[in-house]
Length: 252
Ligand code: ATP
Image (cartoon, rainbow, N blue to C red):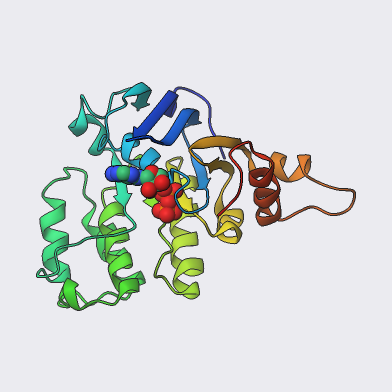
């Protein structure tokens, strides 16, 4: 459930250009604490660029970004120590063994939870002595998720967490993990172009197209407002309709 209070993420009028290309166009977004926020958009829509601003990897050239009320570029420690992050690339050090990766990562986080890390390792069926570089893509994603979760971050940011994961892992692991975090009152922001999956786990959906937010609302109210008689459209159908209707054009 989405909670009240100060927003975890507050973005106002964020515009980002790469040369002549406008990757984010006057984006404003306020995410209250607690709940699962799905960020959806076609390839190149601007999802990763938005996430990179939230993590302080890109400086806001125009507009402002606040995470926990802090500027993530000015205060990277204050912000990043409270965020768990799993990137699309998930570039973990291949030469480490799983237990070394866990030991190495825990050194950065005073609130690291050993028992939880071990529980996740078991649930994810990860061999502690396996070399990270020899893990399959799905196993690497599980390892990345483990180290993003084991310090129980207030905000978990997942950029296309499903890429490379098989459907069982997606449904059983990712879905369960995301729901558990939200049920504990923490916040999850995840980007995806798999709308069916977003529909299964998100409380709130933000659609982005050509750098603009075309829709941002609780999933239930999005579905209700797009209902046509007895037919309640899928998020996929709503996305196609909204993106085709936006001034920027197509979903391609
Ligand atoms: P995908 O689903 O394919 O990952 P996305 O929604 O995450 O897409 P972004 O990666 O945010 O999209 O990219 C938005 C736009 O900005 C794209 O047109 C991309 O080519 C461009 N872009 C992103 N980063 C850079 C960069 N460092 N230099 C130049 N252009 C960039």
